Length: 155
Image 1: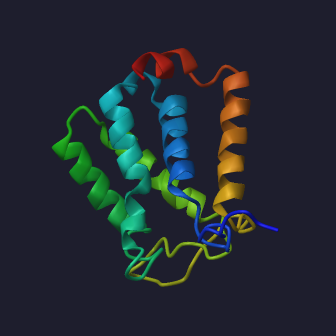
Image 2: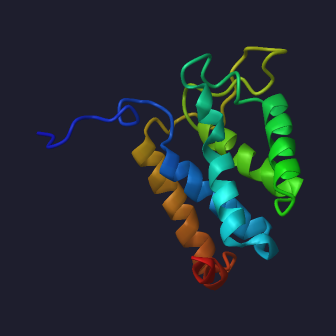
Image 3: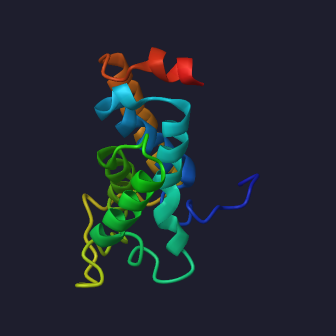
């Protein structure tokens, strides 16, 4: 018997925001360690969840595609010069990549095509996604690839 109601994510919805933020920060730490600062982590977190603003209209189409990623990432980098375009794109695409792990997939080439693409497509819940991201964090930290000391010094 459950002591709490099922969340949208446990019923087969998309990965939750915590998993998206953690994955975005992991990408930042792995590939852009020199850009780690409090402001960059805040911006990376914002970009990592931004695609879900389309939850009310054509979810996983309108903001989950390469065109939206380019426009929004460029806009963020222009508005916040301390955030390189490459880091903006990586943060935004981290969200899309996690959503591509779910059975629903993502219309990555929308509006040219509404066909949804997925990678593996077996992760159905936010809990599974969060577990996967935490596992990646643990492995990469153990291997010494994540500059944990630098991340912790910012916080």
